[in-house]
Image (cartoon, rainbow, N blue to C red; front, side, top):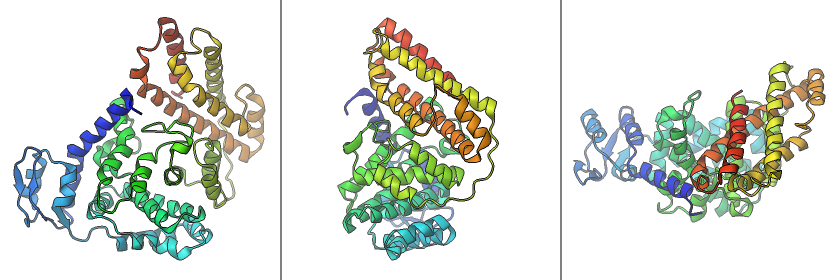
Length: 435
C-alpha cells in the first residue's frame, strides 16, 4: 500500500537497519560475557576499517565500535561468537519450557506428534546471522528470548494441528524464531514494562515487523513464506493491524498462526490466566483466524475461578464512557456532513466490529444495569465483564493510535465542518481511554 504512512514506516525501518546504535551497544555488551572475534574486517558506514579480521573484540575495540556508525547488517557477518545459540541449545531450551509449564505439556500431548514438538527445531538449518541475533536476545534481552521460544512452541502446535506440510512447518518455525528480531533495533527502555510510550517512540514499535523482514529476507536458505510471516505477524483479519493494515485472505496462513501464537503468549505473560486468555480470544475472533483460535481454545486449562471483587462504580463509569462513545459515533455516521469523510469511512468497520463483539459477548453498551447486577452475583460473570472492559479499553487505545497514524493522510481530506465534528468525537475517544 503506497501511502504516506507506509512509506514513512518503511523509511524508519530501513534507517534502523542501516544505523542502530542501540543494537550495536547490545553487541558490544555481549563481548563482556562471550568471546567475540572478527571473522572479517569490520568497516564503518564511512568506509573506515575499524577491526581487522581475526582480531578478538576487547574493551578497547568495543569502545571503538561504539564511537562509529555501523550497519547492523555488517556485524553478524563480521563477528564469530563462542557458546552462542544453536539449533541444539534452542531444542534444549524448549524442552525446559515443556517440563516446567503444564499448558505446554498439554499442547504437546494434543499436537499429535509430541516428539516433533520437543525436538522439531533441532532439524532447522538457521543462518549464522539469525543465530547471532538470537544470542543477543538470550543474553541481553532475556524477556524477548523467552517470548520468542513460547511463540515458536505454540506456533508449532498450531501448525501440526492445522496439518501443514513439513516444509511449511519448518518455514513457520523459522518465522517464529525471527518474528521479533526487529525489536533488537529499538531502545530497550521503550519496551520496558511500565514505560509510557510517547508518539515518537510508538512509530518504532509499528515498524519492527518491517525491520525483522529486512534483516532476514535475503539471508541464504530463508524461504519467502518465512519472511512474509514475519512482516505479517501484527496484521489482523479485520484490517486493524500493522504495518500495512492487511485484511482476511491478504494474510498468509503462517502469518495468521504467528499472530495468534504471539498474542496468546503476550496475554499469558501479562496475566497467567487461561480463562482470561479464553475470553480475550473469543472477544477478538474477528481479528484472528477462527480455526486457529479454536485449536487454542480446546487446549485451554480451566482452573477454579477465584472470587473477583467487582469495582462497580469505576466499572460503571468506564462502561458508560464506552456507551457514550458508540452513541457519538452513530451521530457521526448519520450526519450528512461527516458520513462520507475519510476517517469516518475508514473507521466504520472498526467501530462496527467492536460493537458486534460486545453484543456477542452478552454486553449491550446501551443497557448497563443487567450485566452489572449479574456480575455482582456471579464471580464468572464478574471476571468476564472486567476482562471485556479491559479489552475494550485496550482496543480503543489501539484505535486512537491507528487514527494518529493516518492523520497525515486525512488532514487535507477533511472539510472544515467534518473536521470539527470528527475531532470532537476524537476528543471523546481520548477521554474514554484515560480511565
